[in-house]
Image 1: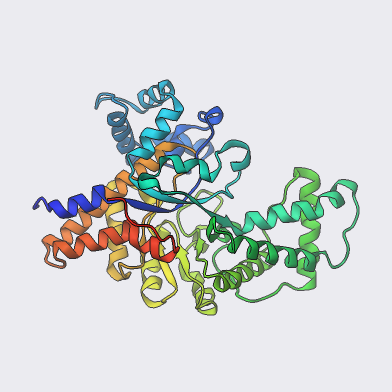
Image 2: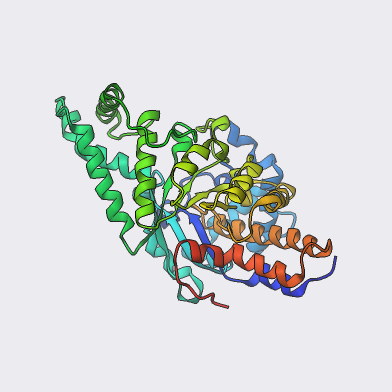
Length: 408
């Protein structure tokens, strides 16, 4: 295959906007979780087999080279060497290698407040003087709000007033509108995929029995666990619809977790194909399908092609899927999706290595697939360069209204 120098430079050197990620752990918590979490969401007994995946073997070799270890290094060698590196230096080295100019950070991930850094802390690693912004997690905002509103009732064993759900919805709507108007917020995110599935029924307010049962469930959860987790389909669907309406008013995109996740997901309800009624009901709301919707990538590409308000992110599969799988995912995206609507992300979280590996492997896959398109005569090299630069930077810059100039 020809060297494609211009395409190579674009794929490996052009600055990137990471349109979906999470905060890094604080130094005091840098070793709180098994490092296998950088390549897999398997937990418990299932996590024991992670080192035997192609994904982990590839990450071992790439991290070994990054840390100055020999090619024969094992996963255990990588873990040991990592523990010897100053955490601040590790963060700077990993993020510095990515050429990321801005990260849109979902800071609603469980444990962020107790364990992780503030989203603006990550500014120090951005190239070209870039900065980071918030993506507001819809369900986390609702749960925190409910905890405040119902906490005293749960603690004292008292019944809240009959209209408490209506009060909650009014406060939730005001909170989202406040967030949407903030200069630090560049969008919303929903994890309804995890809670009750992507088969959201749009604009269907819950009935009295639904809200009554929901409030009682929240009170019981607060009394036992001191927290709320919204897992009622009627309520989840209501909150998502409200958020999409508010997002449209403020021109804020809404990201949806789709596809790839941990065992908490009902996989059959994780395809974005279930979202067609929602997409049609909110044509003015820009909807971003996260994580390539893997393994439903073709479903996502189809939706991106036929609905003007749908965009497709290709994060998390780097580094969570094998080399050939990653190339196939990019190829499947390109089967239908317009290249001005696809966007890079790392889904980086907790460990700085997730940002490093996510970026490195995404750049490798982009170069491989687009160079093949040029070799096959489907694209000129200049066209391929433009598409790669759009996917890495310009598409997100436009969608999220960041107003950045690439630091080339």
